[in-house]
Image (cartoon, rainbow, N blue to C red):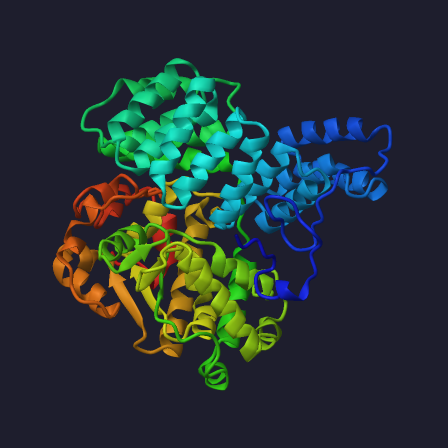
Amino acid sequence: MNNRLPPAWSKHLKPGPVSKPRLPPGVLPKTSTVPRAPDDDALLKQAYSLQQARRLDEAQDLCLKILARTPNHPAALYTLGTIYLGYDDERALRYFARAVGEEPNNPYYHLGLGTAYVKVTEYSSAIEHMQYALELQPDLIEALCELGNAYLEFGKPGMALPLYEKALKINRDHPKVRVGLARALTSVGRMDDAAAYLHEAIVRRIAVPTAYNDLVQTKKFTEEPEELKSILGELRNPRLDPDGVEKLHLAAGKVLNDLKRYKDAFYHFNKSKQASGRYFNIDQYRRWIDSLIETFTPEMFAATAGYGNASEAPVFVVGMPRSGTTLTEQICASHPDVYGAGELMKLRRVANAIELRKSAGNLGQAVASVTKDLSATLAEEHLNYLRERAPAALRIIDKMPHNFELIGLIGLLFPNARIIHCRRDAIDNCVSCFVQKFGEGHSYNTDLQTLGLYYREYDRLMQHWNRVFPGRIFENRYETLVDDQEVQSRQLIDYLGLPWDDACLRFFDKDGSVNTPSRWQVRQPIYNSSVKRWKNYENEIRPLIDTLGDLADI
């Protein structure tokens, strides 16, 4: 198991002895004997209440106050981990690791650490900590569900289903059991079985907004279902939290879109975005793109020739979300010599570790700190991480779409890596993003104008990468792939340097899990109903079209 943090220079740290399972460097497992102030518990309860009310800054401040007077208070460390999880996963991971170091026999702390490892796609470490949590408390239902989720994300759905089924026997009404089992079934194409569990969840009033939103993704509706009336009824519930409102509006929008009631559908999609309450700083993002363009130049790459690792195994599928990245990965991964690893956070973690992040001031200084030896170390660790997933594969695909921002780092670490850029009609691409619920890292997707501005920055950066790496990046046009699947698929496999295999034409028969919003579509043969879909919403999306400007093909 490889738990090193940060990945490249952990060898310079000196971790003490560790217990099973191993912890990140510098975290020493022990029994916590630090005296605690008498009102720490009261402050922790107050922090928990603030966290539940989404007043995260105040909750964080209380936990830090506890740690200021009771250093290494394990419950305060754990609570900080839960606060940061989903917002700053690296920081969450470190707080959970410190909590485990203080109380190594607390199953919840191992579960938290394992969950954080899933967030950063370090699945082996995640699985080991979750398994240890279950050794400590075999009936810990949250650990069973999170371990199932880890196996799903790791591409091992056959190991996930029994865990959810075991959890179901312990508590049939636990939200994570119902929703998790349905998602596991959906990921392996068992849509009808998933729908049955979600229907039962709704009847039993378990995680109703999530269940409805997941349910409507399991099929395409050709006539109005009873569920639509129920979803609209649920939206009248004054006790719904913002997340529930967002999910129910998305569910209603999806059904209405299927029924070709486009104006009504877009009303609900807009309402879902308003409920999310997210904000994206487009000016800060634009400055970061400026810095990337100024830093990663042909001259810089000429000066760093010989850096990294010459392996041809890594393949990066990049582009905007909803541009065909999942479809592209499925086609390529149907080849017997190709493994699709899904969306990995590894490259982003490396970028963050060398301060190649949006909040960084001087990217040139960050890149200059990467010596030839360090680049080789970073690349070797990355290769080991990939090889853990598929030791015999000739090509291993990371299809994290937003790695389009990090193509410069790819060029530095892997000069022979293949990069497939998935591009789609700009308006179609943005509309397809807008009607989906993405995570916190996609707040640019909250309103049409910001989404259009973000797309322009993405396009500007990709034009730069094509100038820096002329002829190296394969552009895979979604519309071209839909128009002639075989010709485009053959070109993809040829670009990977592999002989053709007819299995690539039947990608929808491929076993394995799919855990993106495209999981229903990639179980079907290629279809063209998504081409120029935006015309259904032409009157509703004028702010997007106007913002895209010359990139909008109208």
